[in-house]
Image (cartoon, rainbow, N blue to C red; front, side, top):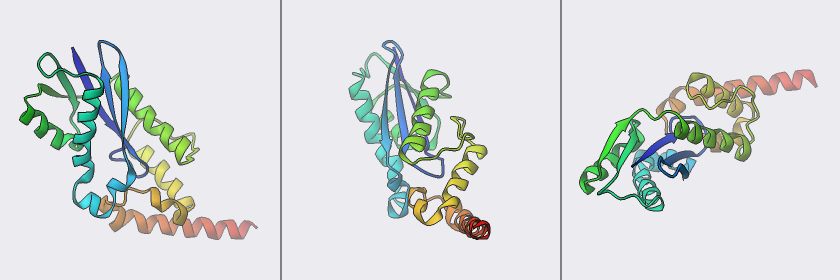
Length: 184
């Protein structure tokens, strides 16, 4: 028996991030949340998302009645799990770094996209469960459209946000605002 663990949203520009767990034998899936504020300021500098992930993994494994003497964890290779790997080694938990595909990956990515749509109100039809540059720009454009009200949802700890993208988002916001005023 094994449990898969994957993440979504940890590298995305806005919103909370999620850790998903899937117990193969019972087909049970659960999710834990990493709030967006962990990806900002001192929380980011102190690696709080990585540290909090250990707590969430402990909670998830307990909820799924994980037995470290009989089971193995298939763990996503992402760096959000760096401290989890250390914890697993210290606790003698058998795990394998894996590319998580299929049911859990689809479910955890859908959980993230549903959060963006339902909790933040992102309505773009181009927002999909596929992470990467396309999704980044959907989120960037959403922030830029109403920058000063939406910046609070940005994972502002990311270095490039502060050195490149924040300035570009403000420029885009000003351009959008100017065009709105021209059309009225």
